[in-house]
Image 1 (cartoon, one colour):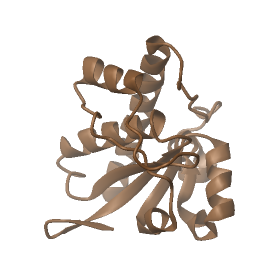
Image 2 (tube, helix red, strand yellow):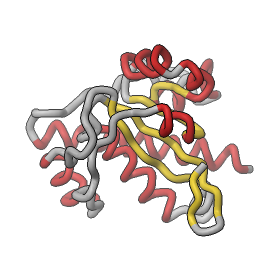
Image 3 (tube, helix red, strand yellow):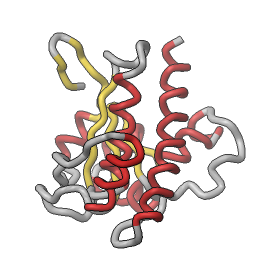
Image 4 (cartoon, helix red, strand yellow):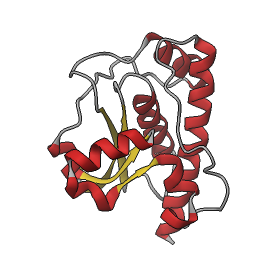
Length: 175
């Protein structure tokens, strides 16, 4: 857990490959929505990391552009972070963009096994999370890296839908 003032916030760690597209967008959507939610505001905070990156790379230009133009969310200060035992250990929940990311984490960080899941499986698969059946037919969120802006927009919309479902799931667990 991380401290924010005197509050202990549960950290959600979003994982993708390079930590320049999907996971920074997921992190930004989550933190934006949580800050607007009276129930979750002082309970959760998201961060992100990548399984194949180096520290310090800014979010891709298309990710920055689409987040700013469509949702007025600024991710220009984001810098990539390689997944570490420290950020895995601090995380309450680890959500990956693909099965490959999950497998990498479980192989390299065995202690993460009880708190790591593919994002869309976590929110939609009733076997893994108590979610609604049938919605995780394709649990992968495709990597838009290097593709046209429209692909980034589609990816961001897919992420936003998943993050909204995650927020709803977390809220239902508060009741």
